[in-house]
Length: 156
Image 1 (cartoon, one colour):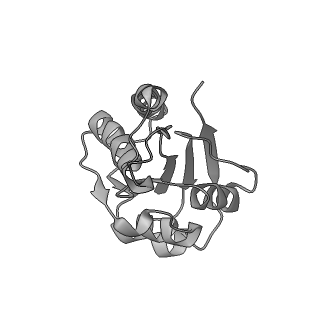
Image 2 (cartoon, rainbow, N blue to C red):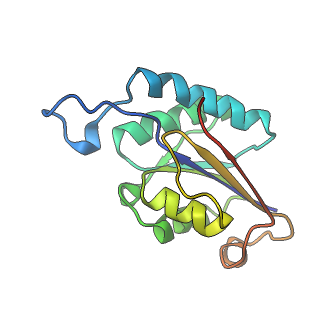
Image 3 (cartoon, rainbow, N blue to C red):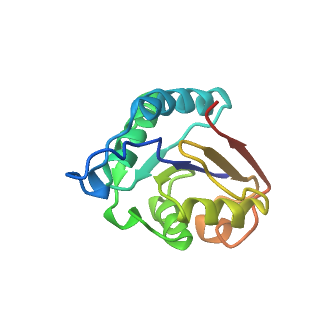
């Protein structure tokens, strides 16, 4: 079985012109939502083998909350900052782990979620979409097929 969780980074601050987009931190809501959504994902029985994240501060911090919940150190990939859907999926494939969380940004996250689900039109901040290929154990095969099932959850 192959499982993928797409996690859009939690809500970030916009206030400081002194910070680059890459360096924006999570705001109070984002700091609350990231561990909450990690716990909600854990409650579904999803157990990741790897977490891969954009290097942007808001994504790293979100990934760290998921990593803390699941006892994993996120792998940081600079290419995920602003990556299109194809690169986000390739980041999961590259991990070669049966169950992967990818933490990154829009619009790539929403495009990939829509492509895999056929229904998810938008991934709000800290939304989690999971995809399962029950009869596959090879990412190369799974990534070329529609998943057998998917879920979507977002912060209250």
